Amino acid sequence: MSQVFILQNQDKLFFGKNKEWVDGYDANALYKTLHKDEAINQMVEITAKDYKQRVKIIACDLDEKALPMIDSEIMPAPLPKVPKPPKAGTDLFAEAAEAQADEPEEELTFSAESEAADDSGETQATLI
Image 1: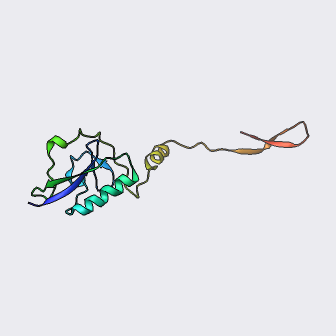
Image 2 (image 1 turned 90 degrees about the vertical axis):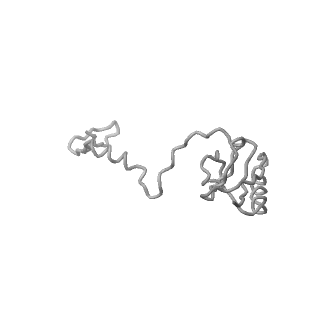
Image 3 (image 1 turned 135 degrees about the vertical axis):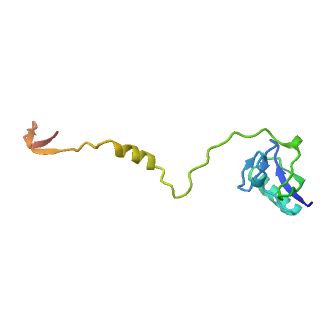
């Protein structure tokens, strides 16, 4: 078994591959490195961007799937599930367009025959 290094903040959340803090229940989403100096560099970058973060490096053994085995004592409470954003290339307005396609559109008509005169003597077309 080899070891990897992961990062954990003061809220017991782990640093993820997507550079955001995750709860660690999906071990595949964690930032992990075989080299302690890389973990130290990442920790310095995190604390330089946000001075309120108190990050520590944790050494973990790997399981048979090469994922870190995290001790249950240091695991945080699970974070609430957030819906995933739509994939790139999908039309965000497709549902709204389909709903509007069912309703018939009213056609606007303009008539120049019925014109009304103002006080100034100019004529103005009436919208029907």
